[in-house]
Amino acid sequence: MVDFLVHKFVKDYENTENAQVRTSYGVMASVTGIFCNILLFAGKLTVGLVLHSVSVMADAFNNLSDAASSVVGFVGVKMASKPADQDHPFGHGRIEYIAALIVSFLVIEVGLSFLKTAIGKIREPEELAFHAVSILILLASIGVKLWMAYFNRKLGKRIHSNVMLAAAADAMGDAVTTSAAIFSLLFWRFTGINIDGFVGVAVALVVMWAGVGIAKDTLEPLIGEAVDPDLYRQIMEFVESYDGILGSHDLIVHNYGPTRSLASIHAEVPNDVSIEASHEIIDRIERAAAKRLGIFLVIHMDPVEVRDDRVAIIRDKVTAVLKEVDERLTLHDFRMVDGEQQINLIFDVVVPHAYRGEELTRLQLEIMKRVNKLDSRYQCVMTMEKAYVAGE
Image (cartoon, rainbow, N blue to C red):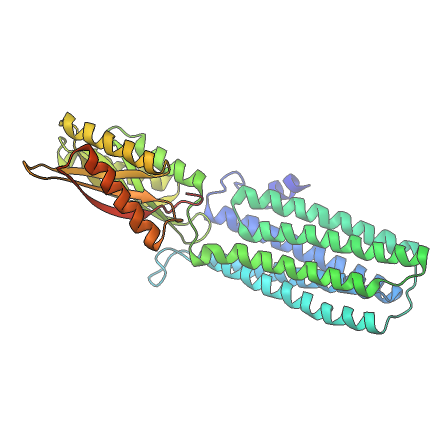
């Protein structure tokens, strides 16, 4: 069914890096969500009124908020697809994240509303009614929600959409809350004990938790999250695959929405090659990154000594010292200023984010002490910096 809808309504559906194709996916998912959720709202509201069940009615209005969320998602996807302009040179892709954030607030608001209603039902419970047909309708709605979760998760992973992945998580939560409502009705049917208000509270809390989760996932790219390790390795390996590039470091990726990223990286080039030759390679990599990775990449050249074996040996010794202190430490931009009485070793050290304040100072002093033991003339001129990749 998912593939049928994709093939029917999305042209060039395999080209998921294309902004227009992503928009078509988003529009199709939003329209599907609006249709399914309005249908579920009507069915569950009818069942809730017939059975006098607050948990079922809470679940019904949760579906109505999902329909509203799909409308917001639809508008957000359309606005995010607007091309770059003078005021927004990197496009409008982040509007998709803002749309997801609005969705999260709608979900939380629905949860708060029915938390209040459920507490009222605990204080003054109503007599429930039981109809087998109503239970069947609710079971069918669970099936629809499970399909919607699968639908949105599959498409969300295909086009890397936070909005769709949030919708998938919300749909799975809806399936759970509907199951809880059915449980409360069956429990009353066989025991005569009315726990509908308590289940309504549980449903409301689950809905609110889902809203908080959506907000958290959406705020991270808006605030500025660390680059994904897989993307980090992909870009590093891509740059280092070119002849004339000895290594790379200091990769930073700025997210301007799905499929819209700006990145900067330092590429190490041999210092015995002309600037013009290295610059030509850098230009070629930047153009290729835009075409193959869909990333606007800016590369800074770092010349590296390749003819002086003594510099390479000392660099290896310093690297070994860093690994002795903490195996997670790495260095780059190593240079040496030689002298008879003093030899300055100039380099940058990448340290984990756990090192802060006095602990970072102690680490720096320990490195300097151990390097100085290698040769009393060695003086370290270090820049301590943090990695920009998640998990590093």
